[in-house]
Every structure is written in C-alpha cells, then in structure tokens.
Length: 447
Image (cartoon, rainbow, N blue to C red; front, side, top):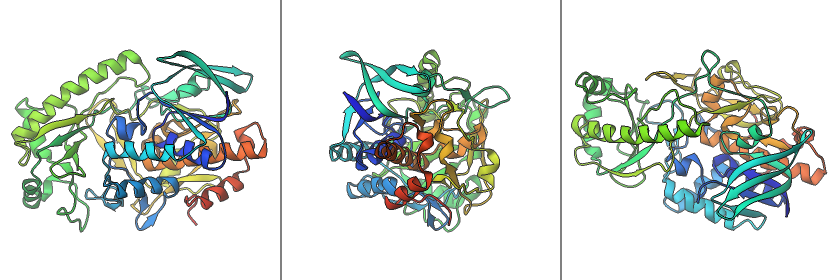
C-alpha cells in the first residue's frame, strides 16, 4: 500500500507531525520502535515539558497545547506553572504513563493514521533526489512501504542518515555530544522536609522569584551536600547538584542526575554500555539521597526509563543551520514555523558542568522552515532535535514543546504538498504553510 505520508518515530515531534498531516487530509503511516507512543517523554521519562512560554506570552500552542489540555483532563498534568528554578517562564509537569494513554486516544480518533509499533527502519530506497520507500523489520519480518512524502521524527535522523543525507555529531572541538541521562521516578519522598530545608538553606539552591513551593517543588541545588558526599566517596557521578521535579502523584519525584559521558547515541555498543552504566548510577544516586538529603530517608525506586535519555546525536546539513547568534539575538525568521523560549542548556560532554546561556526570560526566537529541508533530497524532511542547528543552538531547540511545534509544521507541510500536487518539500508555499499553522492555533512568529 502507498501512503501519502510516512512518519518515522512517534515521539513528541512525530506525534504532532502525524496528527497535523492526518487532520489536513493526508493518509499517514506512523512507525514506532516502541510498543507505545511518546518517545523520550514516555520511554525515557523526560519531563517536565519546558517551555511553552516567554514571560507571559505563550509561544507554543496548536496541537502541543491540545495534548496538555487532554493530559489535564485525565489527571496527567497540572498544566503550565511558573518555573520554581527560574530558568524558564513556565514548566509543564506530566505523568508519562498518562501521556501514553492520551496519545493512543488521539491516534485512535484519526482515521487517516495507520500505526505500526514494535518496528524499526532497516533501509531506505532512494533514487536520485527522491525517497521511494523504506524497509522495516519487526516480528512479521521485513516489509517495504511507499509514500509520496516522508518525515523523519526518529530524533536521531535514522531515515535521513540511511538516505545518505549529510550530518554532524557533537561539538566542533572534539565531536563529543552532550551526556546521556537515565531519568527515574522515586516514591516515598517527604516534601515537607524538603521545603523546610530549602527555607533554611536558600543559598544552596537556584530559585526563581516569588515561587510558592507549597504548590510544586523543583530543585537544582544541594551543592554543599553533593560536594560533601564526593569528599566521602559516597557520590562519584559527574554531577555537581541534585536536579529533581515533583511528580503528579503525592510523594513522587523525577530524578535527573545520572550522567553518561563520551558515548554515542547512534552506536549500538555505546548505547548498551550507557544503559548498564546508567542503571548502576541509579543505585548510587538513591543511596546518596537516602543518606544525605532530608526527606528521602524512606524513598524507593518506582520506575526507571525504558531507555536512556539521549540529548544529542545527528544534526543534519539543511538549507539553513540555526546558529548560536540566532538563539541569543531572539531572531524572528520570515519563514519561521515554530518558536522556542528555552535557553541554551549545555551539559558538558566531558564533565559535570551545566551551563545555561540566555539573554532573558523574555527572549525567544522562531525556527525557519529551511532548518528541516535536507539538501538534495526532495520528499524527506527532518523534525525534532536533528534539524539543521549548531551544537550550541541545538542545546536550546531540542526541547519537547519546540519539537512538537516543529512536528506540527512538518505534518502540515506534507499535507500542503499533497494537496498542491508538488514533489518537493522545498516547493511548499511557506506563507500558506504559516497561515495553515495559525489556523490550527499554532504560534509561528513574534508579531
């Protein structure tokens, strides 16, 4: 069977791409390696979502906001709240298990989407500058699928790489990518003790202004206790702080502290080693929290990610490369199709440093359509964290809300191409695409 659009990967960008294309009349095949939808947010427990806002202005809406609204109705989110750490304007806590349910419900409501789970892309058949089909492998064997247009939302750009599109990995100085992290969830956390400690030791934390920790707790801190634990050989992970976010349910905490460095998320041997190292680190982190941090004395492991969280892999050579200056200057592009208000969040590829680079919380930028357009491949587009961006710029644009906005644009572009009977993503009428996105409730510019 030939589809209008094949979307590879059902993470935050792939989900919105498939929904956007299908709602605009395209017949979509959605292919996902896991047995569920949601990508890093569900498989790797990556959350909260950061960020939908620049100060008081919401810069990511559309399908992404619909997903949040559905989560709230099912008790899977408390919505957008001020960031207790003060890095961004708002954060959006989520429960990953409920997000899985929301995504299944949304796909079930779209007759134009066919789903194929537990399936990996194994090969791309490309002639000249056009992808003809992709081959997939799963429990049924190997099978090829044809489409007029293809959207690579795998995060790692697997389809584009197989199609021989050019890419970079890591920073220019040594080709190293940002560390990988295994998120995990704890139960039995006493937040009353944590709030009391923060109240008595505010200098040990990065805190936003006028934050009500009684409503929600997020922590970047305990610097002295981490240093003390390292001096006593009780904490040997390349982290300088405790980083955690309160869960949706009482007594739960999502922990973002493991750090696996100098391994590639596109190498199977490296990924295997990374999973082993990260799970070992979980034991060390839990032991540290129980011994040193008041409120964690009776905590216990509830869940770890089904896969390690990967921050950075391939970044493709596209018709435009988002730069550090674009981010810092809050640039607004004429062909902007998504927005991002997240700072440059650089985790040191070799060590424990975490650097946030930003101008102000009111600064945000738009991302040009050209960052998704591959050179010399007409009917394949990339979306999510593997778009054309520098190592530094990607450290900002990689976040889930922006990936959702990019995916919605990619799906809308594919649907427009089908309707206009054109053969290349590059020929899509960008003003028409921007108007379509606005009609779907998405924000696509700064005016």
